[in-house]
Amino acid sequence: MTPPELLNLLPLTVLGALLALDVVSFPQAMVSRPIVAATAAGALMGYPARGLAIGAALEFFALESLPFGASRYPEWGSAAVVGGALFAMTPDGTPAAMTISVLAALLTASVGGSSMVLLRLRNARVVRRQQAGIARGSGGTIARLQIAGLTADLLRGALITFTGLFVFRSLHPALLASVTMPAMVSRAVVTSVASAVGIAAVWKIIHVTEGARWWLAGGLAVGLVIAGGLL
Amino acid sequence: MRTPMATPVVGPTLPLGTRLAITLRLFAIQGVWNYETMLGNGLAFCMEPALRRLPGGRGGEEYRAAMARHSGYFNAHPYLASVAVGALARAELDGVPLSQIERFRTAAPGPLGSIGDRLVWAGWLPLCSALALLAFGLGASPVGVVLIFLASFNVVHLALRLWGLHAGWRDGLRVAQSLGHPLLRQGPAHVARATAFVAGIALPVAAQGFIGPGRAVLGAVLAAVAAGAVLITLLHGRLEGWRLATVVLAAFVLYSMVR
Image 1 (tube, rainbow over the protein chains, first blue to last red):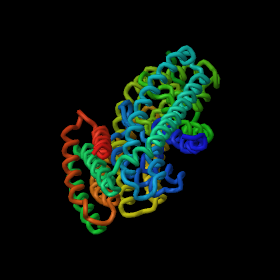
Image 2 (image 1 turned 45 degrees about the vertical axis):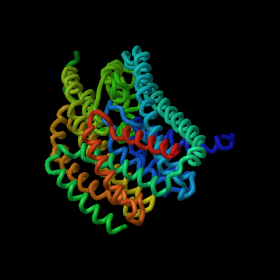
Image 3 (image 1 turned 135 degrees about the vertical axis):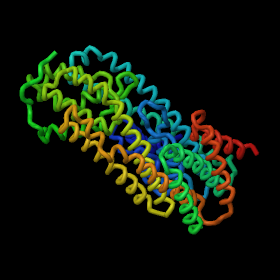
Image 4 (image 1 turned 90 degrees about the vertical axis):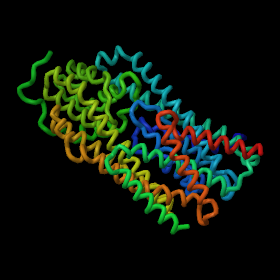
């Protein structure tokens, strides 16, 4: 990539960093959910609808990995920026563009999730190092620890976003040239995989609630009728 | 060991400035979340504006003792942690015996975590996602989809944080009664049923939104979705669906390259 191309990644990196921060640290308003984050990335590239398409696909996957406390889950904020931006960079109808963009986002989300684990381990070490100040009840120490944690998470998000964009933007032309599946097949594959994960995720969430499975069945029936009418 | 004060240091209301400072800090309560103290440091950070009102003020002996006490291990759902922030701040300013404060700190994480997880992460968030996906499938604009998701989710998000702080401060360590509110006890089940219904509608409609007009591949897609969903459900606990999806998509891309 040329220096101007690298510079072009800067706004997306800032966006990815801010959205990654939202996942856990601040403010957890769920602007980091893929359906928002990828749309924002697409909008930054001038194609919000293409960002939304990737965001909606990723939202199916994100339904499965909800941010329960200490559990390990993919980090969707920076990943959705990578996926949304990649898809927005390719002209409409480009073969395999959607599959490659979603795959790039999933891989970034996986690395991002691991980076969150490393950050939490680092936070524990930092807190341990400041134990003397904490035990004294120093308000300054406690506030500085919060700010240090937030800053580290912001930088983590920036690093993951920039690396994801750099790697996949560099590979993108070669991948698009070598993958020959038609755009329709690409969309169908992503739809199948994402919908399967989404339905299984909803089942996992609701199956313990009395009567909810019937509400799901009823909803699916209504949805299939609406989808059939839209075709 | 301290003795309870005959009269509370402050009345039943916090000054607006202090309340605002605590509310803003609540959004960063997980700033230094870690596997050892979890929310502990964040809890003390959020309570700090209220603790400045202890006798001796900021840096005083009581302030320092309270800050040290509350920066230890604590865990809760991040939104409902505001209940603990309000209750513990009130208890400290009322001079409640330390044994009661410690008992609350030990007992509160369980209910504050489980209610929040069921109501928000496993309830409201998937419902809002499903609503946004439905809007996408029905052809709403990108701005419309994003607004539907953010507005619907954050109404409850903000309400929970604000209500939690208010209820915690109002009731002090007796706030457990507020957690028995019917909305919190029965709400998750109702939200789960609503999620099931809306997600049931949203999934095929959103899938149709991807495929676009025409039925050429619809049969194959439906068969693949059904088979995939059953497989992922059977693998539950052993392999996450998104990981399986990553492998399937990578294999498909590789196959397309080499064929």
